[in-house]
Length: 179
Image (cartoon, rainbow, N blue to C red; front, side, top):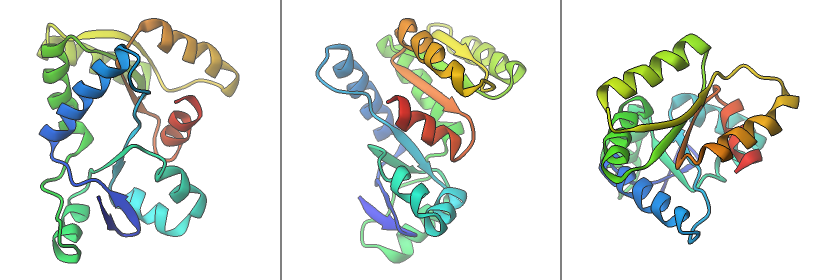
């Protein structure tokens, strides 16, 4: 764990994050662990953390904060003795996670974006990873009063991993509220 731009960031590779995901999900199935929150540190999040105390405090409640942005990795190499091994962009890690989930029987729930984008994402994952189970999915356009029903839907799906794409900071607030 190092601090880059005032944000405590984990020194993990994409492969290490995948192994953590599998281990945590399998342990959570057995009731041995509570769900983990994984947030992404990129230039936008680091800048927000530097200027918005409320956001920084919420952001730091994640169990893992990975280096989504190349500038975060670069800064870790210049400013610390324990550099982050690589950029772990969520868009790339999603594929690593899908391969590992497929191999270990983990299931995904996709939350976010428009219906068209969400549907296309699910279709692409299903095509690329035919043994990956998408336990459920929903677009990211809902009213606050719909959240309880949405959480019930996610819980009923039995998904091991919930991918939340509502935009920063909304997605992090949502995750913290419904951990």
